[in-house]
Length: 408
Ligand code: ASP
Ligand code: MG
Image (cartoon, rainbow, N blue to C red; front, top):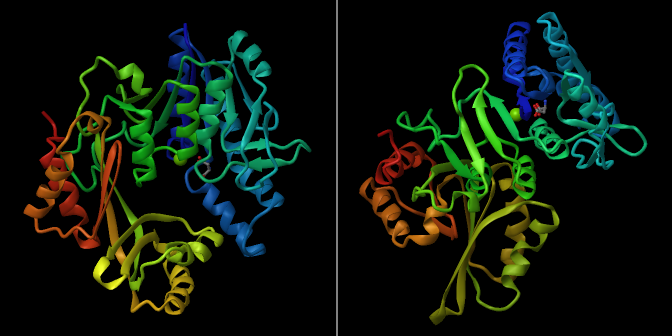
């Protein structure tokens, strides 16, 4: 007998019929002899609907009352699922975050979980009941309802698995696992059986949005065995494991290719090459909490000048320009140019640590397709390039092919 936490996302509970299908799946796990704690999201589209309603009354919507509104989506889901389970003869009990209780700090709309008291849930499980817990929410010290930020049910699932010392945390979603690339772009993409936490973190942060990043960090820190799988079809899904557990297994060189379309690039041309320039160029941007991703600077020694390029999220592009342009002028730069139509392509794989030549193979594959590389950055387990957005599909497919990631 195992203790399993199963998390179902919004698409898995999008209708009464689908809630019934989830109940069937949960009841099967229980009938197989497992103790099951279920975490659910709001029905698909519900959080957006509530957010829209809230926005029509207070713009921008935020604060304590917004969480009272948003948390209602998950509250409906847990009651409905518990009812569906009872209708199948499976004893069940639902819990809002506050009822568990899941204690959080008081940062409304993006609260962090501080502590989960698993006692009530554990005694329910021991009494043979399935417990159904609302994702995405908790309560602060005062008892005020809080929510954890969009996609936060993943974090609830992982955190509950930690608190209950579950044998496995299963994340059910609308895809049957993590793929070598987005199958909508690369039809030959293949489901991965296993992946390390670090690789999954890179893939998530690079735009392969299967799991909330905070949930991944949590799972990795507490070493919760995590499995991503489909709520619509049976299958083994993708197991996410600590890297040391992979030792001895044959590791693929590259696990996957991720991309991020939300990037924009800004270049300050021929700015004086002297101490403090990089700091000045980015100080206001940092103060405004605009996230800077890649930074490339290359000095031309004969001119005592340098070109300084960096990327920001596309949504922040205009604001970043407004901040950089005047500073660049003050510093005596020749001009500032920008391009909001770029994408970042990345190769991810722990196998890179022990293999040379991956970068050149990557650049060769892109060159063969005449894809111009605008920026390059590397870390231990990833290589990213910035290219024009029109090369997104071509680039992903060329890399998928070059690293033999397709089936068979
Ligand atoms: N319902 C919330 C959202 O849509 C939380 C979640 O689904 O993970 O962001
Ligand atoms: Mg989600």
